[in-house]
Image 1 (cartoon, rainbow, N blue to C red):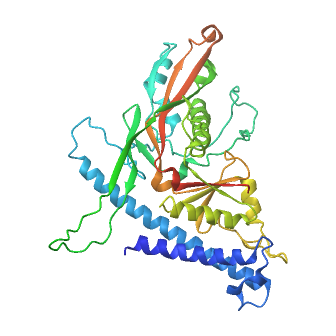
Image 2 (cartoon, helix red, strand yellow; image 1 turned 120 degrees about the horizontal axis):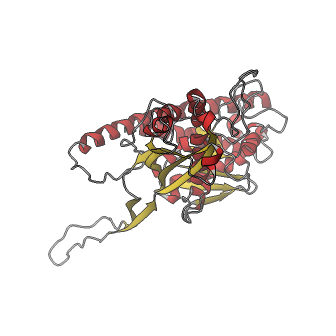
Image 3 (spheres, one colour; image 1 turned 45 degrees about the vertical axis):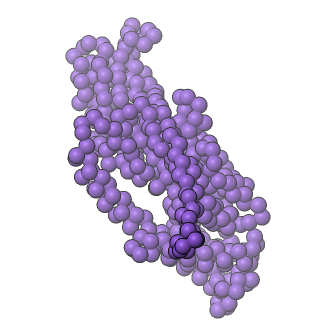
Length: 422
């Protein structure tokens, strides 16, 4: 048994022990009912013990993630070595957790833009810049900025007050991949009948017959989709290199990634939308019912393990729902997730929690994002500039447009479970 398997088993055992405590405490979180906490004299000490167990879960969960990252790196290194012998132009089908083919960049979108042929040709006075393809990894973190152009700074402080927009919340849970095709085509094992059993030795007159197992496969396809936007900017502002660089950095990339973030969960799959996890057929469901929310999440994790045969790697919750969990108290008012003066980990049952307001309030999502989902980039952000839009030519305005192309695949729907009624 390797270290990762051992740590996963330890994590599952700790999760089960803490779940037993919550189960006995009931919806009122009355820790006096917990037989596992008999050695603790009062609610404060019992709550402290629950906090200690949760801290252990957090530490073990991080160990599992670290070991998984090492295992993924080893697998990716092996695949890269095998890829050296692959004929040029042959499609390399991405695998869950992969992404070795994706190129990275140490430069920002704005830096690449002002160094591009499109921007340089515009500066030479052509009026229309040719295509500038910026090789940007979609998971690169970008800050938000302003949506309104303004004249060069004179008597201003230089401080820019950003609009209140949702940050990127889901993308970082999902491993990346890359493709040079218009669609991701893969095979799914849809029939797996295991008829293996014990048989006796064949003897004269009695012949043992091997039972027949069965395997069946179905071809699946996820089409590459485009997400796009454009921003108008005056000739004067475009001539200010430092301004346009920050302009591109702050908003164009962010707008595209923000929309992609939403699509990964909520996309309905009807072209040109991606199909987000919440709209994938056969994703499991666990109703909260009368259970405390942590219990409902644990039961969803169990469904992922038992029915999905997967290892949960994360939980997505609306910030208001996470607030309710963070503020859970025992029957006599002791905080379960730690004192308000403590920096409580954003984890539950040892799994990282992504607070995302792109998920509907009162609905959570538990899943094995690492192994059974993948965001596959056809190409990164591409930028073009032109004054040919509408009457922009005579108005002294340029249109800077940006788009990206990607596909999203949920390889095993049963590796995910929605928690409803939170």
